[in-house]
Structures are given as structure tokens and as C-alpha cells.
Image (tube, rainbow, N blue to C red; front, side, top):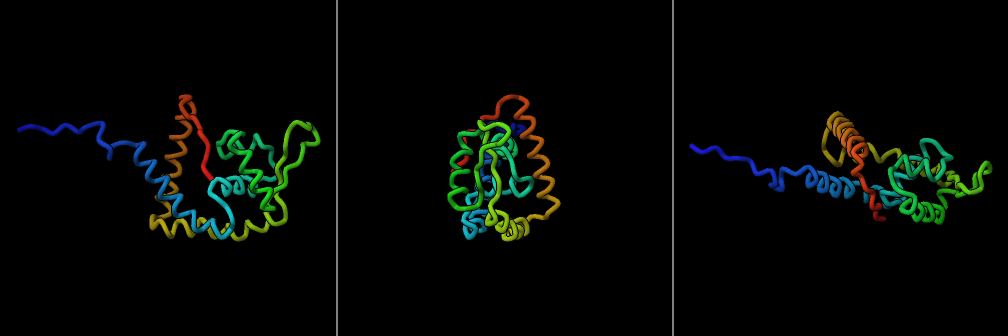
Length: 157
């Protein structure tokens, strides 16, 4: 009797495939929730960072959401054009930009507070499972960064 050997290159066994499909699916859940707010998902990540600790330097935002500055710049310009943030020169070092929320940006937080619960409800997966998934993905991301293999190629708006 022959034993069947699992093919290590079978598509459904690939972590990269599962992550890519999950990424598209989850972003698809966020899209209709963010559209009424006038935000793309990358812009939402910037706003989350700022709602947590505004004002922030561009460098601090880039580190928080793990995007490089050239990718982040257009996001910030669009958020500024939408009246949600203000970009000012750092009074301590004029070479640096400091990003702060406008009153409209602060007010948008109240609308955004409904998003996490709506995402959980639409995904139909228990909160504990999603928190465990987030924790595992965080460990994967840390390990990938440590190995020097992450290469953020930018987020699409």
C-alpha cells in the first residue's frame, strides 16, 4: 500500500496564498464601511495612528503603520485635502513635518468607532479567533522584519 506524500508546492498549502486571499477578503469587508467616511484602507490606518496619539511626525506614522515615507506622502496629502489633517513644520526642527488632526479629523473618530464591531459581525468569526489571528500575524510580521525580508512596496489607494 502506497502512502500519499503531500506536495509541498500545492497551492492550498501555501501561507502566502492564504494571506493574499485573506487580505483581499478582509479589505473587501472594510471598503464599504470606509467609503461613507471618504477613506481608503491605507488612509484609515493613518487616521487610526493619529486618533491614538496625534500629533505625530511623518516618520512616527510611517513606523506605526509600516509604510515607507514615499508611500505615505500621497496619503497625507489626500487626507489634508479632505480637511482631516494638518501638516505643519516641526518648530524644533523645520526639516520635519508634524501631522495633527483637524476638528473634522477628530470628529470622524466617532463615526469610525462602529467599524471594528461591524467588521467582526461581517466576518462571522468570533472575536477571540480574530484576536488570536491578529496575534499570530503580528508574530509573523515581527519575524519577517527580523529576517530582513519585508519589502513594503506601498499600499494602493
